[in-house]
Image (cartoon, rainbow, N blue to C red):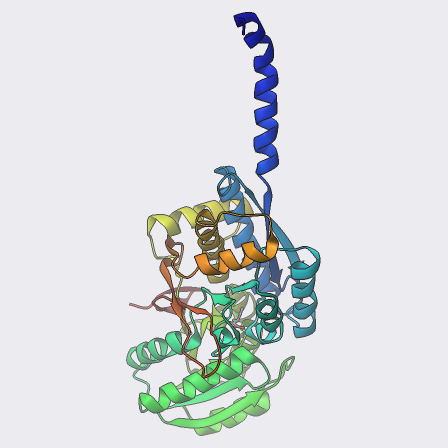
Length: 385
Ligand code: 1QQ
């Protein structure tokens, strides 16, 4: 071939190879089912932001093996029925490779069986109830279960305030608040802290005076609250209105700025366990906090951090997967690549561990991560030292 001809065909060659690689680089569709409206939206919107930030970062760096990540985001409203609908849409209609979410454990117990039956990974970033990963080998979570968080939190709170006895209040019709209650009950027995009274409420309750009056009469040193953030905030406010000064102890459901939007300074001295703290100044967390602030103009919370980390965990797993384009095969390949992923994320060092065995069943994967104990001061959580 003459030099001249080469020169003439070069642009064409470049164009065709360019086109070829553009055709190979497909989008990887990742579903996200989050509570973007309703009482759990404060968690869900933070989760959506965490995912968006991480996906934008991965894509800006060229994607995974040349493929861009495309988030398909659906609002499950914090409701079981909607979580089921959204999971079905993402799995069967949109053909997502994996589904993140849903936001609440309560919804995960309804939706995850669909993902397990379809052999699609359901990856929870905020589900902390016991038994979530017993649903099947396709259920993964990077949220640290209450069973790991509450014993550490309770021990620290008892020491900090010199607590001798506590009262408990919890929601008895939500999987997370009920599971947190079971863990608190066992933990208090284990740590030999007597319970003066146990009071329950139902989803949607806004008036807790009847329960709080009984708690007041039982004269505890602190109040254990296995609650979602909005209920917890109202409970705290109403406790102070009754002239009670006891500190509160809770799980990671309390770790939302919404607690202080509602309870303001009345939330001070609340002790809460979580895998994430803004005061953890590792390079990964500092970079996450700065990028989040720059993108959204507000401070991130635990739920944004866990979502952000989850996307990076999946991106790392995807690096090891050779996508074939056959969705069923690729979904299973991703499930098989996930368990060995470890990262140093916004929430610190992260690894999976196989869920506790259940006779006759295959189980999924829990988070292997340390809990940090925080105390509320001046309308935000800081590390309890
Ligand atoms: C659960 C939780 C909530 C606090 C999620 C936001 O941990 O439902 O499991």
